[in-house]
Length: 349
Image (cartoon, rainbow, N blue to C red; front, side, top):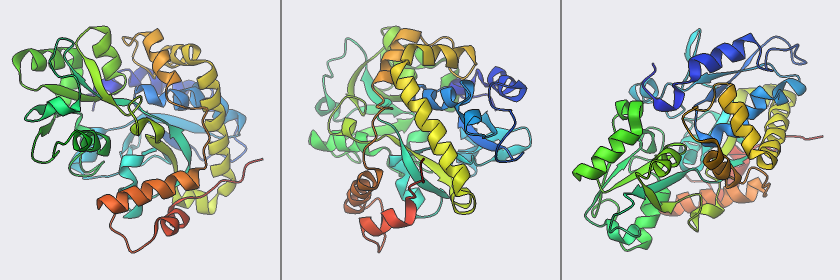
């Protein structure tokens, strides 16, 4: 289903992966392939690099990347996004797990262990460049158009915590004082035109988007950010996504799971050191939209903290504590107990 603008380049990318792309080489772990997602999102650059530069292959892994089918995932009420493979829809073996979706890890709807960090930031609230809105405090009584995957079943029903928290810190009740409305999937066929017309007509006052959408909008002088989980504190100090691997894979094949973590760590470090080359490789491989400008994308990649390596167990404990206190996670376990249940530290050489 090619309705999502972030995966319009996937047909070429899938063909490249299937024909080689550094992934289909003799595997130290046998012939069984591993499936990972690709989306065209800027924050997926390190995963794209892991595939296209052969970091998985260096670890003896046979990995194929396929696009998410977000529309069908919503229709099927799947908290874990499904990928579209030649054999049909399935859950990926590993990939990013948003911190915003940790409640779905706890309730079992995302059947993965958290095994490592991944990226900081990639989302923002934007308003027209000439808007009188200068901060979240000016959004009271306004309508905010948001990405359709920012709500249930992927995230919590009322939307992303960084948006709600930004409003609350400005004295605004996110459930009573603003209207947050997901945009239609078809809007991604030409996101810039849809957002520009929405701003111009007054259909909505702000737009909440995920990179590379904001990169495109800023480049066309359609929007400017007022809040971001990439730059605005305290959100910029927390992971946006963590790395997850299927529980059965970790439990039954820990050496393979460790190889996945090693490959992605190598890719994250290489991408952090070579952001322009990383975007160029992803675009050349068809995994990142060609229409998104390279330099602004590379600048954004620099802000993702791919080279950071904090104590993941402590980070998870903090996230679980925050979500228990806010009522997003309702469990009879302490944050420390939840970490023990849902985090696995991979043995690294």
